[in-house]
Length: 312
Image (cartoon, rainbow, N blue to C red; front, side, top):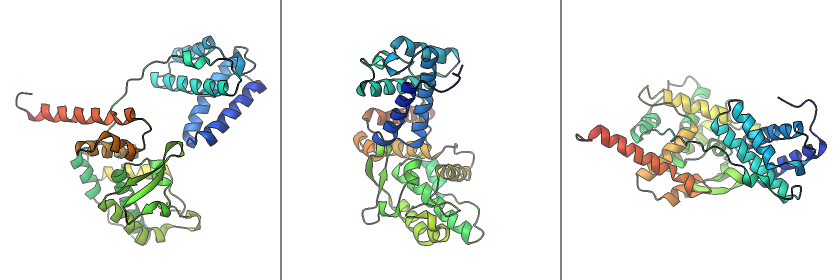
């Protein structure tokens, strides 16, 4: 049930201040900020219905009641866990601002989410995708797009970068001599990622022969541009990935840009890379996040053993 009318002014001001904090100080992406604010809007709406006039009225029983309402409404465990995390972030911010004498969020529990192992392509499947070819291009524009799409696929897999990081690349971020790319990751953290020879060649071919055909004045220094000449957007990149994987045939499962990132990380570990190096390449703030790929590799090893060993 949604509240009629605006929030009480103190709650509204706290919400606006939290939004500024997420955008400026934490440097979160627009998508993440929208997700946080959607959760906080739900919390503050519930708080207003319960008679809260300002942040100081937020109590642990109110937070728990809000989450219980989410559960009764049939929200998934992952959604409830995410909303609990957003609430804890908000109350911690309010406490730092002096609006809450104590932080009730530290007492707020949430259901544990069962982590699903990420979808990864096997190395031979990935090779089939990258070595495959789409229909022969018809005209200069189609040829330029074909070269661009090849470079996108090679770079996503070679560097294991996020789709948002790829879309944000500028020409100055490429170092041909060292074969590296500089990317701006989550929380505006910058890192330098190595790139293999096939990807470096594909990007160089795109910059030399494809980009001049597509890039308009609005492209600026963007490495990758769309058909209309502006910086490419994540939706276009996702379409490119799905289309290229589809050309590899039904034996290769469909996945998106994040699946290529998962595949790159898994293949690095399978090839002998140490976990800390993979963490640096992926830009994970915590090594625990990177450790999921060791589980993926072990599961794949078990699957191969069970399929191949005569007494498995």
